[in-house]
Image (tube, rainbow, N blue to C red; front, side):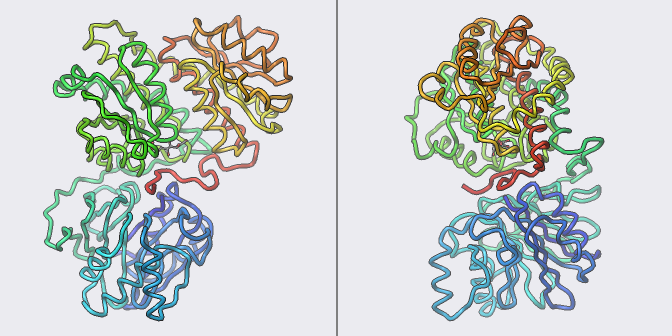
Length: 589
Ligand code: F6R
């Protein structure tokens, strides 16, 4: 959450910062700001709202600067709370949460210092300013200030009169880059990637100093660290929307290619060392959040059914507090598109501390999760920009299903083939256009239910999450058999119900729930490969999708649900790429 960019070099800094911030806006879009250093003086420009509100700052002079796009944690989204925060000679941008901010703030207030925001971040500017007066060295002042902070941070700091940017990282991602045109720092490679530039990932506890001459990295004692910089080619840059009106729509369309590439890549990554661990594995724990958690649920269903292996799925945010009993030979699988989700990272680290091996399934190379894990199964969805995860869900399923078939193989169990799933996904996309006609009944709805049994329940949960996060309609995904144990009381004529029915063996039982909601007046929408069900009297409309093994069916059945959410969001007048209150890559707990 929150995006940081910093630059110093030959070019004017303002356009570099603004263009970088636009690419980082998926990390937060409550407010934004930049600070420029010109002739030794600092100029700050901040606005509530999106990065485009900073356009007037594009003409500001200065070859060094810092920028920020914010997802509010401490303090309301407002210009006052937008970064950069300035105190004395210091100006900084921060991503993370300073947990002891209140105590530090009280200290500053007792010294007579005044605050101009409600944020936890501003306290760091106060600390650094005080220490800079003692040290007369920005790097040392930042390091000493960081020694007093608890929590998470990625900082980029400017000081009046000094031609440098100092950066620090603790549990919040920060990339340092350099090229002929100068030195950069950013929360995400995509913001600074360009041909000819090179970058490295700062580790927790490290610092960096950016000057016109380049970027230097220092350890916690400020000893220089020799880093291998990797090339930031075009392939790391964030993509555009192409012919599509929104990133979300484009990313839904990219699912078949994400599936195909991930199936290919995941097979290559199951090396002999991982195979050995899989053969010894008796229990699987999945830790993940949101959509990735739903991928975990889909995998649980496939792993239990196909590989006969006991699998448990944990909300990563609950895992550490639950402290599940450590079973011997447990493999923990941490699933995360961004590889930076703080809760998933913390759960993976907790699992490691309990002696489990950790396998990361992530879409971002060199992410914190990838670097923390023992093994990696990469997903190859390509960059996902829309806040709502779509193609990354299917890519996660592709990687996890490869793992499932491998686990089955190691146990001499037959496993259904994964070949052809990408083609079926393309066919599903083509057939799902019909869901656009469903939209009016959803826009008028009081609330929506998504129902299913088995793997269909997992798809239903994901469909419901998609709808609620971008349309803001109250929505719940439910096990079809559970509905009558209380929740049926909520169903009436203004409660559309979407039933996912892809497993023939469970179809009759799921249809019982359909009869029950229909009897209460609910309009029923069906996602199924079974034509006979589509003709049922109770069904208002149906998305007829291709048939595949029921254990893998969420990969297909989720597609009409993603499209439905997209079209309902548009009809409600919402921006599907940037839903309110949310941000991609949740790097705070
Ligand atoms: C929903 C969504 C979120 C993420 C969740 C985990 O559309 O995008 O629920 O799935 O925040 O993010 P990652 O996968 O990056 O760990």
